[in-house]
Length: 124
Length: 108
Image (tube, rainbow over all chains, first blue to last red; front, top):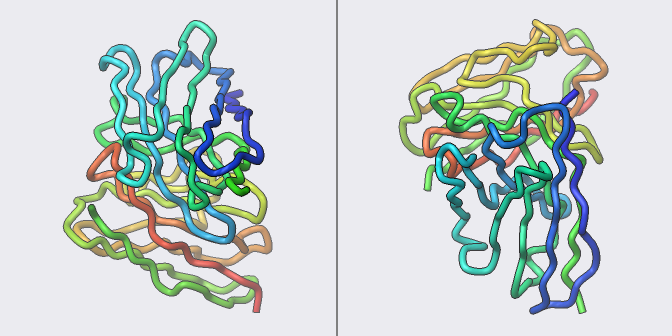
């Protein structure tokens, strides 16, 4: 059974940093790209960023709202993807979901498995 | 960025009703359109990929259609477990995905 489990969320002050982790199981983690998606309280879904699998260079892409502040990385030996969030702002408050992304396997990507999400609250 | 607009934003319906949700893209996206269902407090779940491909395990009362800029999600006969929020997502600009604002389906 495919599972994604996020961790690392919590309350953080504006301007500070936080790192989220996403641990995958039930599939060959290194074969897949991963995307992060967030959802502010009571709002819709917003794509945050993406990391390709190593076969495609493990490169990353980011939404304009987080580019330069957030960094995605992966450790395939541990089946973990990370979201490093720096210079956090109040508008980054959201539930952050890790997703398995079929980009690179299918012609266009889609998000076939999601973690349960982890809440990040940015407040003083 | 490609903008996605869903209509309606909310919808009241009864068990057994046929329901259609529309999603419109700001430019042609071929059939690179996916649908997700989200229940309160839960993660979204993929229902349909590439406009009309039903995911394994998703009931056949769900169907998707469309191409270009206009897409629909249809539930042929609403069941109690279908009351949720539905999101469309374009993957034409993979991986720079954008989602519609969501359609909340409520019990009448």
